Amino acid sequence: MFDFTIDGRIVSVKEGTTILEAARSAGLHIPTLCYLKNVSSIGSCRLCVVEVEGTAGLVSSCNTVVKPGMVVHTNSDAITAARRTALQLIIADHGLN
Image: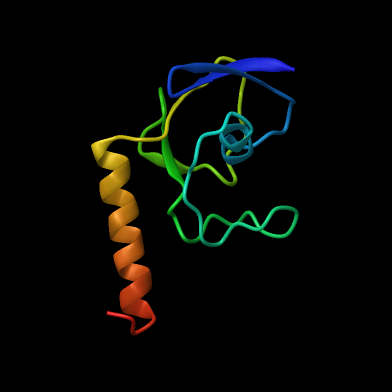
């Protein structure tokens, strides 16, 4: 077990835990469409993106493994904009607009 920080909370996780799994264990909601536990972690929908300090750009939380001391943010203007764009592209691609 080791600690990392997500939205200002220190959370202890086992090695191999994804950011999404860690967030859920801490009671934090990160939206997903393509993620199915033990089935899929392809990160294709891009709705679960988060910011990781020290990393350029946003990362998908469903297939990014937590590292000791990592600092993660799940809500910012950049994250909201990226999620909105991803959802708009999914809707447009499926004729739902």
